[in-house]
Length: 324
Image (tube, rainbow, N blue to C red; front, side, top):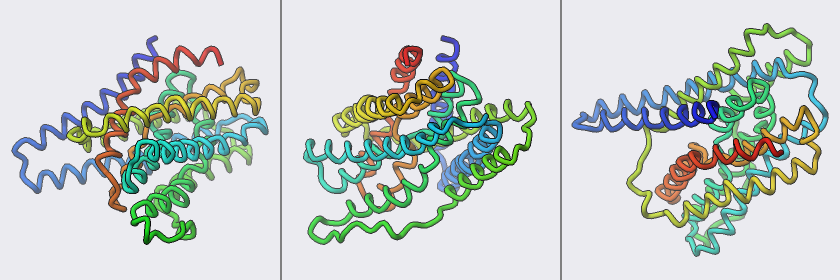
């Protein structure tokens, strides 16, 4: 129970602190102050994305014991989770009779998942530092999927149906965040494979970096929260929550169980998969709707609603996980 409370406090206190800062700056603030505030928000986010979270993954992979071959299914399960969420969101959009711009936003929210910050935090708080490496393996292909698959699909939905060309997945670019993640994972795996002993203190550093990175990331998210459009998209947000917290977890947990992950290390990999497959919409789900002129308010609402739903989802996870 203490771990549950601490996890929820970290998540919502960080979000609330960021939003409180935003409200304070917004009151009678000069345009120059708002620009400086936004620049500070982006810097805090970059510290988490390019520094603390990748460092945590590197240190944890460095200390990972010789992995069971079945753990190689973790990246595949991650891919399946994002594709399941995206396809389910498209099907749901058709059922709700949404237009192309709204469908594109729903696809982004269905596939983009907050694994690196919130998902890893829940894993670490419940099961310790060794879960960071498992979470890193699960999200090994995350950035590739987002930039090589999700972005082209989002761009395609921004075009009118009558003039939309065939989907093009050839315009892949090595984005900076992808380079940072790959560099960290490569360094951690290289140190592990070459048998370089990891000092014990680095295990504590890995956990501390993950928690600090999560706080920075959620603080920056709170600094950019927009609550004005929530009421307009409650139906869509509620339906997307069913995808994120029910449909995707049931499918991915079942697949992980059939692959035998429950028989490794007292079922720890299966528990990590269960947590990561039931996480809310990621902050970066708002990027494609913004740059491709999709329905940004819809994406913002789904992101906020699913994040707030953690106050219910995390306790349910803590109650269910011992049975896996």
